Image (tube, rainbow, N blue to C red; front, top):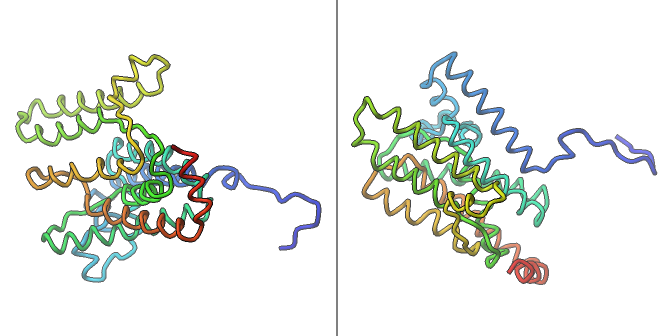
Length: 271
């Protein structure tokens, strides 16, 4: 197609919004589509055809799930937490490295994270299916940890503490009281998250925000969960997080080598 000189190129709706927000829209749309699929065909059908199952991948089956699993979420809180993180981390990184580089990092981090998940399933003889965008998000976090290591970021510790308590205490909760317990924990988690948008500093403290440097965030987000998983089975794909993070770290160091002056100025600016 030839565009006439002097006539501005028309942009469609999606070209006006960031790649980050496009990915958020895609994840949310696929979440609601997943509900329809599960309602129509059952949860097992969804897991077999859209979630990442190590046993099937190692047999050369359902290879497309390396992609679909990145956009799949079974629980509302899961998709909400991932998209909440993606909104802030993704838009920040996209402004630094641009739309195309950002999208490639996201996609490759998610793919490599999925492969790590498959390999860990083989090593630990674990054939549990996995879904979620967190491997890709950790890739973005890895790039930021290298490019702007000293920038300040807040870890919302409150919801993470409640999630861990929920996992640890759930086996000991009487079956009749379990739904009430889960609902209470979910309500508290959402209250903590939404308290961050309050103009009152006292209310924002409900979420237990902890100020960290960017380089420290991936360590805090992964290491404690890995340690806990040795004692308590967690419904978290730590291996996918590690795989995605490694991709981001490697790409961040590549950018530092290729654009030393720019990355040095960037690091100084976000101190």
